[in-house]
Image (cartoon, rainbow, N blue to C red; front, side, top):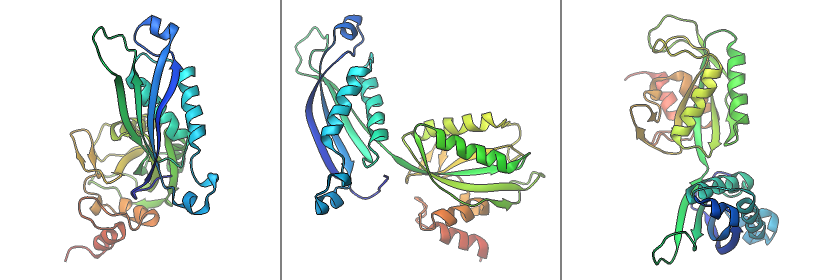
Length: 280
């Protein structure tokens, strides 16, 4: 359950778990005591008003889940324990939108006096909008296959999909018309991981990157990722020049008309209206 509002917190401090994690073989064989601190971010308002457990996350159940996860899995690094268990928690408890997770190791094999070794991570669900396009072969099948792949990805939840529209090619290369749509997803992947996942789906559809703005079996682009502004050689978010692309703005307006461009502050319906009116 994604939320951009400030959220409430459930704290679990000092959960003692005996598990088998460590770089050294004897650590993984003999095991040792770990302590876990967790902060679960979620909206507790309805639970507070109703006084009903079904509207919150059962922290006793969360404690048992973390205990079982750490005992049933083995990692060499604390970083891996924190990363993997944070993702497991967010996938298991969908009312939780984000988690702070600290794994403490009081008996780490450090031959110097110390109080505690620990690793702390913050992980959360993110909202992203993905543009889908195809103008080769069975366009409907390519888009349907992409949506199926997004839906089946273990760290992606497909939330909304716009209707498909037919648009003329963009970029001046003579080719067939495109079939386009936009999908809203929630994901645990960071932007780079999401881009990699989209490329894998494109490659499975036979996408070839031989001509810029050329024909393609499947084109998947990250339009927005939360309200992130990113400008890197291999990834720009929001997608550049989308304010001039009807094949993006029309389906975006259909599923998220009031979503605002993080750089300009303009809603999708406003950008579409400006594009349709043309230059003054």
